[in-house]
Length: 481
Image (cartoon, rainbow, N blue to C red):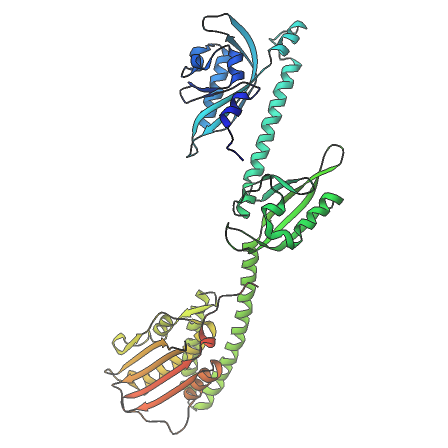
């Protein structure tokens, strides 16, 4: 198809059109306008409208005000009935004529008004007919009121169209049995990634919906007059041009459009994009499920801590202090997870928090930024608490010159490796019997996390290495399916 010659189309339009710039100088006029004014374009090009066709009266003021309004607001304006004299040639006889004029803005690339285009309809013959009927023009005649009411209806329709165009909910009008887009609101355009819709059928514009049952629903609405409504309907929709379809959730309805005889001519589509709210509800449900699971596990852990703490010592005061300290370690871990919506925690922050009660010079820790899931967070919090408590009572943290070093890394198999080493403390030796702390460490690492724990009592102090498999610590994104 060859390039459309818009200049030629403009020139052959049957009603008068002209274009002026911000100085109200002519920059274009079509053949009908030149014939109506009895001028050639060479005569008017670059001339100011009100110098070439002066009118110092009310009609001239109304015309100038209308053009100025369009220049200032960028919105079209209509003069329903305007008396304006026209000189058919320079220096020729002036003829009084009556017009209906529509002024529309012509925007430049940045959206500001560059020109104003005027389209006029000559209603002089109508005015002469009613003058012959001896109805004075000084009063507003029925015909004049009819013209003005017609223009008001047109303006109201334009206002309603703008309301639908800019509404936050999406709207579309589909015409004919193939459901061709004849209107789509801005929000509808955004919903489908700004792709071309007008003049295309639904199947052409959105091929990804062909096999999802929506065209069949439209067929039923068009043929049977059926009204379809849906809430949270799932579909796969291309939201950005060139990308794969995304899971989308919509509240929408299809309503038949009928002509005055009752025949269905199209389908009216309206709806709201619910995708984000559905995803948020799913995420909240998953978080609640995770929280319930964690709470149940935590309660079981608290029961075990209480039973083992009280069983390990006859000193109720020490038992209470030990129990409170272990519960405090759990509480800190829970606070960190709460800040992250019970999803995951950065391991460096966890180590820092659990060892924050000890002097900075006695504690060193280092490792890459690694995120661990909520289950691993609770387990590591208990493990670090038991190691730190033991070091404060019997190991490196029990003397001023003792040092604890904590490091972590991923090995080539993506296992999490955490090492705890003590130096400068009292000589240590393996205990004759396993206390609650040792049993808890073993339960947490091997039972909770399915990992390996190696604790050695070396001359320089306790050394512990735990290895946690990827499945037990890697934070997973919450699935929405």
